[in-house]
Length: 328
Ligand code: LMR
Image 1 (cartoon, helix red, strand yellow):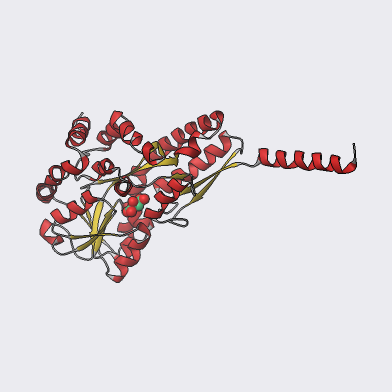
Image 2 (cartoon, rainbow, N blue to C red):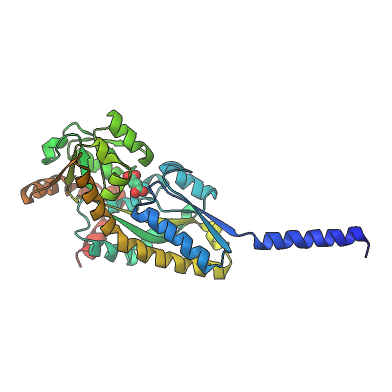
């Protein structure tokens, strides 16, 4: 065989081999810090996925909005520029799946058990299915926690919210929640919240303590109220075309890795939020206030009507199904 022909065959063989060995890359983008429940679980998924596939899959985790901010990340996923995200359940409205905003309804989950009855049950499965027509496959629900309110003035009574500019996620339910308290809601990307609080573009906000502490929001907020008035959690999602196109053995290994990362994530979420609240207390820059029973009742009276007001947007049946499931 002539030398040229041999070199050609060798070259082709080498490139086929190089191509065959190139790992499948999963870009996993998110907006929070690494030392949060979601941040740690993303790293855990990376370790588990790369180990379970013997390196045939490489997971690149991009925290802190390094690659994309809130709104952009969903567009990037649909375009296939990234393969995996775990956005807050409050950010699916703009995608046209308003039902996810049910998770934002004030006081809809009396406990984490009630929440898991919904996310791990038929309701949760049904909601993830609604993402498929958008070119997205839902893999799991990840937990963060119940939210606290913060501002540079004490927020004890409903009247204290009057005229306060409060940052919210892009959810119509959260918009209605803040208006029901007499505040002015302002949607801002997560990565912009610290600066907006520091410069006074907004007066206050709401988030679980783990987000507040890891974004140093407590350094620019003099008062935190432990209200647990609402919940913040996530859906782990992938680009459907990418996921369906994976070799079956790889997809099965990734599914298992996701299940284990989800168990890990749920196990650390409450612990991390408790530790963050302690750390905020210890930092000594923020007064931490827990609502009295009487104040809790006043907040509930002001906020529970939001569930009724949002029936048209989210669906009366879904809200009552969640209330029924949560009450079990
Ligand atoms: C927020 O925007 O406040 C949160 O959704 C951020 C996050 O992903 O926890």
